[in-house]
Length: 211
Image 1 (tube, one colour):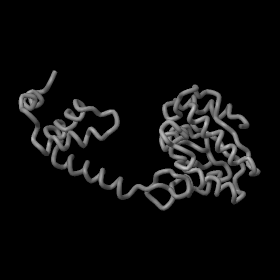
Image 2 (cartoon, one colour; image 1 turned 30 degrees about the vertical axis):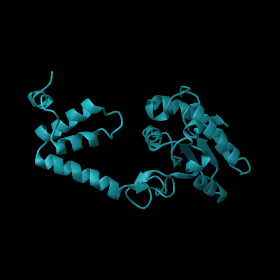
Image 3 (cartoon, helix red, strand yellow; image 1 turned 135 degrees about the horizontal axis):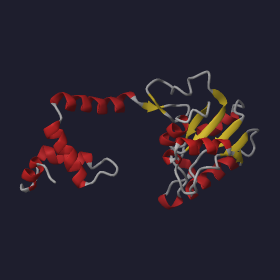
Image 4 (cartoon, rainbow, N blue to C red; image 1 turned 180 degrees about the horizontal axis):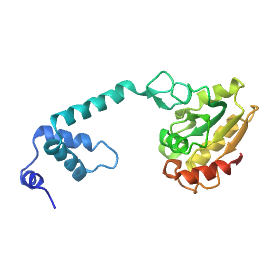
């Protein structure tokens, strides 16, 4: 049932310009349609204090200013390098390749992997015009060229695009003395790593194979 505030504004021809702008801004978020954006905007107007709004706006501004991409692995961080790459206790001879940040977090949350990561920012998708040149792969090859890497674990998603990308990376690594493995067992075909539960990811590590 609509609140009194929503009912009143529904009888108006349009919201005030500033409120309309806020609604449009909320609609930029993925999965947020017109109705949800309206609820967010009206909640902001009627339920959030001035301090709440100020804190929220400051946080939004700070993440764009303070957070950047780790130049080594593609993870997000606030320092020069992410906490994983700068940790001397991690195994820097093992690199786990993932499509996105959410995949990295999903795997990291299992506490089963002690190496480092490499985020390639997507997967090859010719129908969308995404080619190998659009992915963060050149820097991965440069790491391997240095000769300190013993294993590359391909953890792209179990989709057509993820498999195509994994095969391409494997081909690029063919002439290097590095072991290439692929997460397999436990991950459903067509699924994204970021949506898998921790036990599924653990099983995928246990069942990884030569690729």
